[in-house]
Length: 208
Image 1 (tube, rainbow, N blue to C red):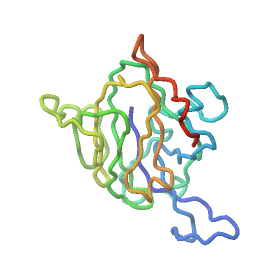
Image 2 (tube, helix red, strand yellow):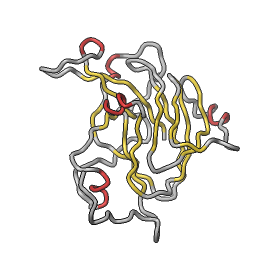
Image 3 (cartoon, helix red, strand yellow):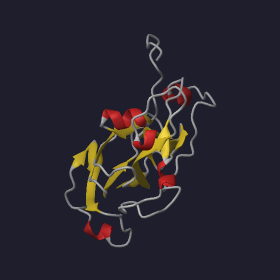
Image 4 (cartoon, helix red, strand yellow):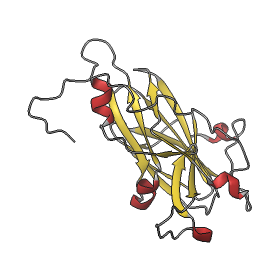
């Protein structure tokens, strides 16, 4: 998977006061999807098979390829798509995920945190990720095991992990402002066999 991390802008709605460039409203996205929090929590919707709460169509690669770290980028690229799209992973699958920072609006580093799963940080770099050359620099001997990876400004970071913990896991930028702007998504790890499955919610569990 390749996932872009971007600061974005939306039009300022009538009656709002917006502090973005040229009077726009600031937003943020992963793979150009600015996450919208649903009215029903995704864990509940997934466990009870409630339809219409989220979309399983989170893109595995950026919907539009461009020079992510160029100094000047078209303003049209700043507008994200809004949605509640999640990534669904088969239990036990081995995942390589490349986070690519972009220079949309402004380049900035992003500490990306994944709940429920520890990751091996195997590579970092500045500029656009090169799928042919950059994997040759990976540390696959003794990479650190982490739950938060720092993606450098206008650079990239690669993590690897096993999708071995079934459940519904939030992944987000740990800068609260970016999280509130939509730089988050959800990873659903499907049930495995036997005990490798989501436990039922306790009867005293309060609703969200």
